[in-house]
Image 1: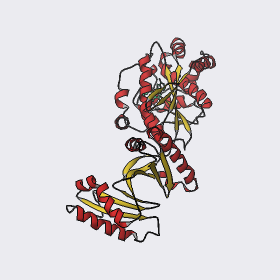
Image 2 (image 1 turned 60 degrees about the vertical axis):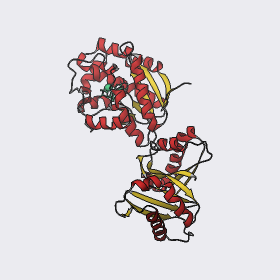
Image 3 (image 1 turned 90 degrees about the vertical axis):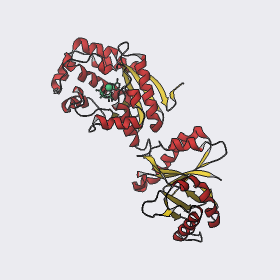
Image 4 (image 1 turned 60 degrees about the horizontal axis):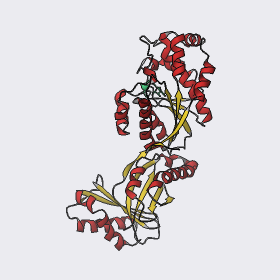
Length: 395
Ligand code: ATP
Ligand code: MG
């Protein structure tokens, strides 16, 4: 019996004239993501994409698992391919869905007849197959409102028979909203922020600030592990690691302690601006949440934003830590995030940071620093690696 994957696209359905280009992008993304699992053929019509294996080597299970994490998909299911013949459909459906039908108490049949030449109308298809299923599974009851299993028959170029549809990853196809730079630390919040913005259709480029020897190599590897989890959804991420030690030491030496963190965060923004420009990114993403720490008060965020040259997306801004943690567990980053390695933010943390900083004071305090020179040197020291769901990719 030939099996395929049926995919229903998501919010795409709302996009009017752009719809077809969004769909093309979704197909391109799915194609790239399941390429490692064999040769597949893609077809799209009426907000459905069919993915058919081209030979016996194609790994349909692995492809289905990957598809569950591709953004832009509302729902997906496996389906049996069948001749467009009612007898054949009645023969295949009880066999193909044997386990699901055996375990269910109630069911209904839904028919979608895209091929208007098919001799039976939708209600007739449902009635015929429903009767057949009741014959073979006498324990079942029909429930049209809230059945345990909905058996769907779609009559297209071929007939497809499937059980319940699974919920897709939702959102928009990666790349359809452009590209943004995610400021990734080793914490809980920034990987979640990256995941959330990727879901809105952004391709991700990563930037991480490392301050060796104050921060360890293991802290950098932790960031690689986190991004590798995010890449399961977003696809490949190029991570740029910026040497941040000189900047932090200069701040510690020359600026008032209460401003350490906020001045450091402004340097992160300046370097992110520089990198965004050279990597074709049009927004910055951080994991900040109002009032979580001193540098995330309203006034502190304002001082940080004052140097940003791009919109700063902060999808966690209104979320409680618990809500952020729920997502981090879902995307499997939580257990990595809680490993104890120093981040550059925790080096030289002031004892009494200013929670209500005023921009002119900060700008005054920064005047003693050679801002351009510091940024230029850090920028020149950037190292770039490619991270996929498999981990760090070798060149
Ligand atoms: P997270 O859990 O994401 O580390 P946090 O609550 O610890 O966040 P901060 O350490 O103040 O908050 O950092 C706020 C945001 O700044 C982070 O979410 C991240 O986007 C960015 N950031 C912090 N440290 C780094 C770093 N070393 N490299 C890159 N970005 C960073
Ligand atoms: Mg942090």
